[in-house]
Image (cartoon, rainbow over all chains, first blue to last red; front, top):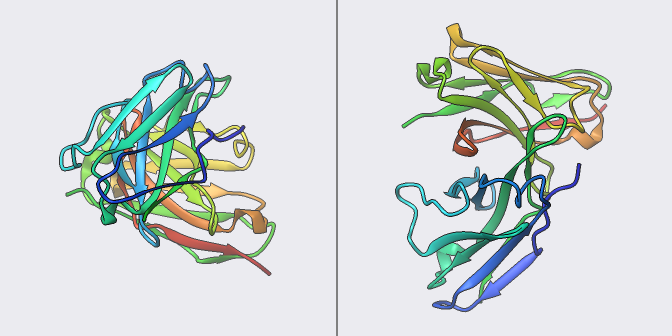
Length: 112
Length: 118
C-alpha cells in the first residue's frame, strides 16, 4: 500500500509563495474530496492546516490554501514567513477492499 | 480544549505485542461524530495511518498492518487502545493517537516513542 507522493523538499524566500504537491490515484486523491494537510515542527505533533481539500480550520492563517486537480492535491503557502519552515504532509481517504487513510511522503519546507 | 494522552511501555522485545492506550480528556469518545485513530512515525520518516475505532467498536485498518493490529475502545474510561502483535525493529516509531472528525485528524496527542529491541 504505497504512500501518496510529495516532493522531498521545497524552498522559498520570505514573502514568496510556494506550492507543495500531493499525487495519488483515482482511488484516493482523485476520487474523493477528503484530502487534508498537516504541519509538523521537529519533536512536535502534527497540526491540521487544511481539510476536505480546501477548508481552513479556525485559527489557521489565510496564507495557507488548498486545491485539487485530478489525482494531485496542492498546498500553497503565500507570503512565506520564517515560522512556516516545517514538515508538511498530506493525507487522503483511500477506497479499497479495506477503506483506510494514507499519508503522503512528506515535504520539508525551507525558508531561505 | 480536547486533550489526548498516549501511555504504555517505551520498549518492547522482538516478537512481543506492543500495547498502547490513549486517554481522551472528555466523553466525546462516546459521540457518534468521531472516530479515534492511531498514527505512527518511524524516526526520520513520514507518517503512517494505522487504524481507527468508532464508539461502538467498529474498526478500519491499513491493509499492510491489518493482520497484526487491533484497535479497541473503552468508553467507560474515555480510552482507546492499540495492540500490535509480533513486533520487529521496523515497528520502532513515535506513536500518536488522534481524533478523526470526518476525514480530518483535528486533535493529536503528543506521541510516545516505542523502541523494539532485545
